[in-house]
Image (cartoon, rainbow, N blue to C red; front, top):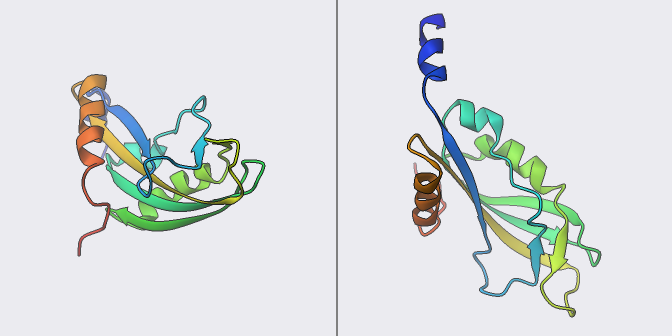
Length: 135
């Protein structure tokens, strides 16, 4: 195992987490975008990419009250840290009429060794693909 360590530290890994709202073009709630979505450390270490779709319950004050993982690829266990982070999100209503309710959220976790532009392009492509584990 120690022979692999120099190789792991000699490559650059660029990570991005793209957030989208798959159920609607105009979501009632949007997350506070001043806080970046962290790429889960364990996923980055293992170079796991994929996606997760959540249903999030939000109270009238914009607090997350419940989070349910609806689908994930490659496997649900990889997204435990992201699920935990999502529970701490605060939400802003997209209109003055927003009330407590549910919001669907998709997170795409992308990695690249060639740079930030490449990882953003990868996430844009990946977000168009179904987020269902195969097999």
